Image (cartoon, rainbow, N blue to C red; front, side, top):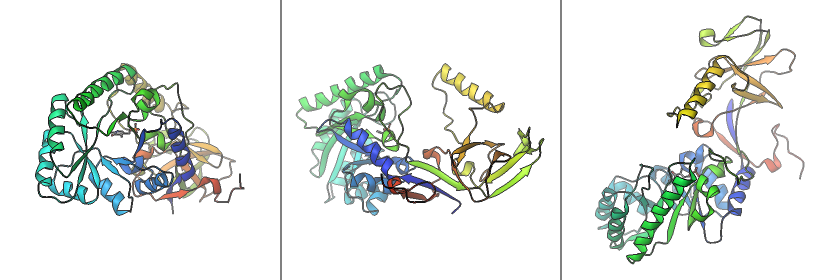
Length: 385
Ligand SMILES: *Cc1c(COP(=O)(O)O)cnc(C)c1O
């Protein structure tokens, strides 16, 4: 195998324990395992979390939920994104997959399908409190809930919203107030709302009073804190490590240029190694969203400029054993070059750990699940304890 991703089961379990330790009794954990569990592998992650007692999962799309069901995951599932075809809704019913209703369009489709269906359908309604993605306003929420309540085979399980600005507790608070007002109005109109939920990882850490009946956590379970400053930090572990092996190693003289366009000039002779990992696998990829403000823009510009001048600290660095080395030259589609000083003992076949953002790592790279309690990097069994 020339590249693989090692997923440390005990790290996932540790992250789960950390999240659970901040949960009040009676607040349900909805583990978000969308996008292949942020790259960690949705099916295996669901199994690992299920064994530790997690009994509710969420994903973005029906297709993701169906794959989990096909793999034998039995726990309740919620799909965030609206399902827009009658067949999709029938599939959800057959497979006991909970759906989100976020528009009157979604409502009408469900009314149509449910009128001649035998199975039950579990539904959460989604309120838009400022993200601008999916959701109902107050008036629509009352209307949609009322009509769903009239469908005998619809089970109304919850109401939720998603916050927009992770950098601003004040704006999350405003969204929270708006959401609670709508949920309260629903209950005043006679509805029973079993599950209110708003918190993602950011809100979960920052605002315990917003935990409500359930929290939807993805990022923290994958071992990372969300972007932003937190006074409360958890003891998280990174479960994800992308590994490969050196496939070529040569000494090149001073003055050699590396990669397309010769962007890197070797100022000293060195060993140049090739790893079979490139942007096709997710190496050197970043999400190129518009900067969020002027400061962010300046930071991004500074990064590009420093990177252009090979400023240390801007490098992509891989690790081999306990040493780290920079990737040099432009990353190729399926390869990259490492510069390793002369005299460092290294050979073809040595294992290299490559920093690849897990959400951007290619899906076709095999994920290998290890319990690092009984495993070490060299493949030897570690001593107990
Ligand atoms: C992705 C997502 C979450 C989880 O967010 P994290 O910040 O990764 O915990 C929760 N709710 C919705 C609707 C999402 O799309």
